[in-house]
Length: 204
Ligand SMILES: CSC[C@@H](O)[C@@H](O)C(=O)COP(=O)(O)O
Ligand SMILES: [Zn+2]
Image (cartoon, rainbow, N blue to C red):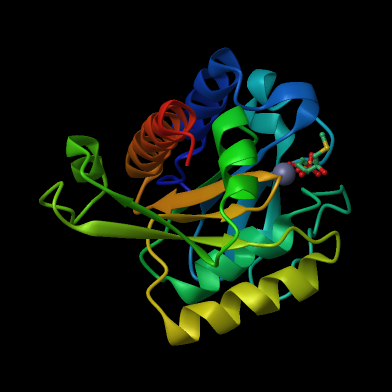
C-alpha cells in the first residue's frame, strides 16, 4: 500500500461512524484516494463500524474496477465520481443517519437551504451564519450509473461543495483528507439535526 494512504485514519473514522449509529445494518461506505488513478473503498455488505484495513479494496477511479476481483461498495460509482470531479477530494464518507434520511424526504426541492446557524462555519470556507448554505438533494436510484450522471450534470451547473443528500437514503460528503471529511460529516449532521428539530417545532 502507498505510504501516505490514510487508511488508518479511515478505519478510525468508520469506527466513530459506527459508534454514532450512522451506519446501521451494513449501510454506508467509505473511501480514501490513493492517487489520480486509484482509491480504496470499503467492501460491499460489511458492517462499516467494525472494518479493518483488510476490508478496503483498491478501485480504479476511471473504470470502477477492483483489480482484486473482490466486490467493492454498491455505491462505488459515487465515490469515483467525486474523485473525478474534485481533484482536491481525498476522502469520501457515505452514511445513513436518521436526520439525513428523513430530512432529505421532507425537502421536495433540489436543494436543502440552511442559514442562521453558527455551525455552518464547521464547513471549510464558510465564515458566517448569515450565508445560506445549499446542500444538493438527489432522488435516490438503484441505478448508480444513472444517479452518478445526474450528480455530474448538477455539478456542471452549480457548485457542489462538502456533500449531497440522497432522498430517503443518506448523506455522502468528502474532504481534502479524512479529518476534513469527518468534520464535514459531523458539521452537516449537526445542521440536519437542528433543521429537523426546528421544522418539528415550527411545523413547517
Ligand atoms: C443496508 S442496504 C444499503 C446499501 O444498499 C447501500 O446504500 C449502502 O450504503 C451500503 O452498501 P455497500 O455495498 O455495503 O457499500
Ligand atoms: Zn447507502
